[in-house]
Length: 143
Image (cartoon, rainbow, N blue to C red; front, side, top):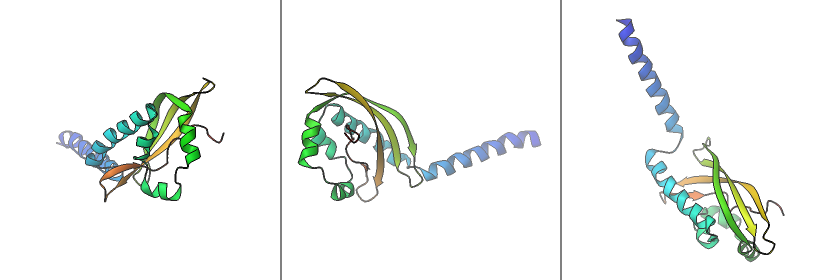
């Protein structure tokens, strides 16, 4: 009898553990909205449409750190050639953190360089949508 109960008990414990792990992360509905949101954001960045990409940035972030005319001009000087997700994880507060490798070509010098960018995706329960809470990618990394 114990042999029959043990696999069932192990399965129940596994199911309980996986349910508890999911409780800390985004819900299924939230995850279903995350993928198309990230894909649209990536498409905007990949095609150098930073005005559209700005629409994905967390309004709270933009209030604290508005995009300047100088920054907009700098984005016009580069062409994104690749955009690859390297890793992603769920943070303790339920946000999604994603490391992305972006290659850009300087339009004036034609020199290409690759930078690693950290994105943070925050779920907004009022708007029922995801916001990119780390701002537009820093393609210059202090330069």
